[in-house]
Image (cartoon, helix red, strand yellow):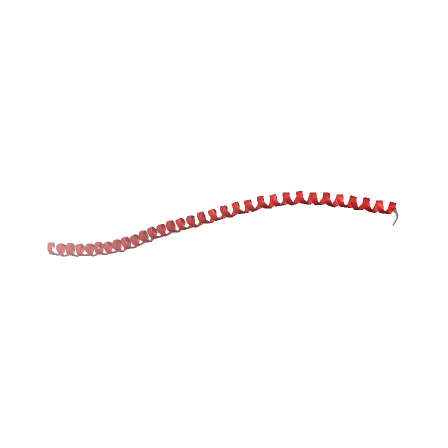
Length: 117
């Protein structure tokens, strides 16, 4: 290899080394940026996970409250229906008693009318 070829080869190697070094520095900067982005994303994910946990706990509490309210309303309705049924039976019994009293009164009136004739 001649001196000129040797110089070109050395110059090529130096230029190549400079480009590689420059590329490595760029990659280091990109790596720092990527690491910062990953850290930010990780913090965001942790925050979202906390939010989801809080929302889940609140939803469960709301569901329990709603269930208690529903059970309470269902019990009140059941009691109301039972009272309506009882009132209906009492009313039917009273109607039956009134009808018997009306028949008995009518029979007494008939007996009295027959005695008066």
